[in-house]
Image (tube, helix red, strand yellow):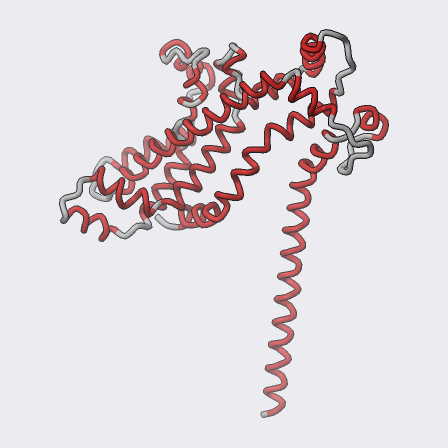
Length: 306
């Protein structure tokens, strides 16, 4: 009997030891992956704070060899007005676009989650088709410019990206997890579909809405393609498209800086590019930690149930 207990205890210790080793390996892999993801950001910050001459001689480094704020003075000084305008456009597009996309997506997801709505099978199929087949770039561009007249319009940065089918299905699955009895009780009390949607589904779907809202916000914040297709006036440039132009033609920055300052100077191009990147990604990095607690739960619930 004692031998059996000793054997069982040894197996438990061995199992616990294996679990701890496996857990340690998982933590090590996650930490290594996090460092790999974080390294480019740290490298950009380090280079942006380094003197241009040191960067040319020694290459990129995470820790600044010779500390300098010259790049930030150039970006926030001579180019600051344009960047501030691009920031304003991007923030407005992100806020208004995210709210509008959430409204449209949640309304469509609610309709798809109503079991007594007979055409929902056809509507699901209608939404699936664009996920697999696309009409192509040319018909889409002609439709947006010739019939919707989106060229050089602010809403051109929002309307073409309003609805993402994947996000609609994610919200639909999340709404399907809400008990039907709650909606039936509201119907008995005389509530219509619109009231049920506003007082039951939207409050209870807060986790899913925050998750999908984060998807939309990241999409709008990082988008430069719509501006590339429809915007030619600089006052409507979003931040990412302005950055895209700057990085594509860095000599343009030197010209702009010299014209603004009135005399010729050597613009630190490499460090200026990194400083611009750091300035543009700041707000969205601050947004993510506030939505993180809803993020994982929303994705898991929306992906599993339904």
